Length: 192
Ligand SMILES: [Zn+2]
Image 1 (cartoon, rainbow, N blue to C red):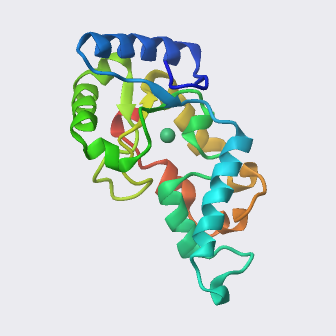
Image 2 (cartoon, rainbow, N blue to C red):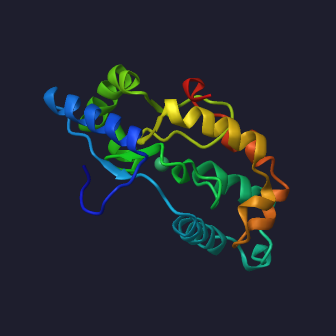
């Protein structure tokens, strides 16, 4: 199902994804998963790597150990911190590639058209569609298995707090940003 390393999902999500990929193949559309479950440590590595790159673009005067509000908000539009990624849940999958440019190409558009028409039959919805007022920016590759993701989101919004996310580079900035309301909650209405 992937281009190399194994992608893990919860069993029901995996089975439904496999059926969807098979149906797509029959229609001449090639789909495969490039990312499923991500561990806390993996997300920590991705978050810190991106934050370090972001901080490196700032002038020395602004480069402090404490990450400012604007940097924090800009980061959250692109990547969730460890403990806050939907990829921890085993219900969410990245398909084909996370390169935005690809999805504007003819083959990317064709895959998206097929997904938009057919993925809901398999329980999958694009989590971060275009034209939402808040939240993570448009990610045409990120699809979520609604039957399992819906209750997990409800639980998450109710019970998980900033302190539960742990300590890592930039973690303090999350105390200034209303991250659950502004970045976790604003997703596709079919996943709420
Ligand atoms: Zn994703």
